[in-house]
Image 1 (cartoon, helix red, strand yellow):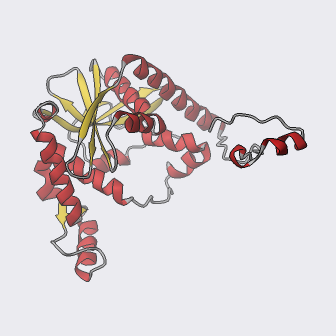
Image 2 (cartoon, helix red, strand yellow):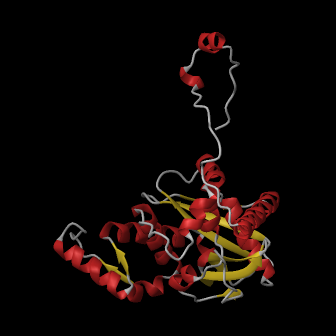
Image 3 (tube, helix red, strand yellow):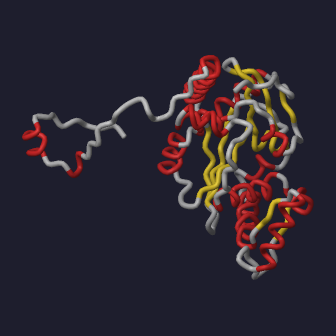
Length: 288
């Protein structure tokens, strides 16, 4: 697999999501696939990559983004299912086919209600709402990073400058304990750090990175989090090392999967001390 030279470089506002996806520059989503296994990265970034089926919660997140960040595009880029019609009905299937043919986002009725509620709750919030009054939405950025052409998609770039905001939706809790775990597990800190690096390489200085986390159930509670500098520095270093590892796989054409080691199946919670003693094995604390 060889990446082409960048078709775009720098900050590209107004680019369609389809054009962004079509670019073969490395995205943070690609890096997350590489985290699983290099071989999986090779499969899902090739010309014959299998089509990933969109999960319902991802569809909802996309629609909420549009309601919050690009409400002016709802009429031209979305097709709304009428009240009482779902995808099991003939009418629903017809509308789905029409949306796919025209390249529109199909919006289920319940998703439209949730997205409208989330958007209204955010804009009515006296602390968080003003951040979204004036700025640019879904801003693409392309730069060479870690030796390869990379890309990022910034949710919201306020015209005040000096910061960017990412919008996350959650089905359960926006509280710190839940978000901190998700931030670590899903590598949000690395994603934001990579985006900041790409913007910096494009000549834009970013002093603050904010993430608004909104629950998708009424009353649509929300929290805003700021990424500390030390976390962003660590995230950028991690992202750069991952991109360099991808470049190394490209150079050697070696894309390992899961076939290089034999892992002992240890279940300490169901294995009593006497069994370890009888087997002559010391109990180990596993870091999972």
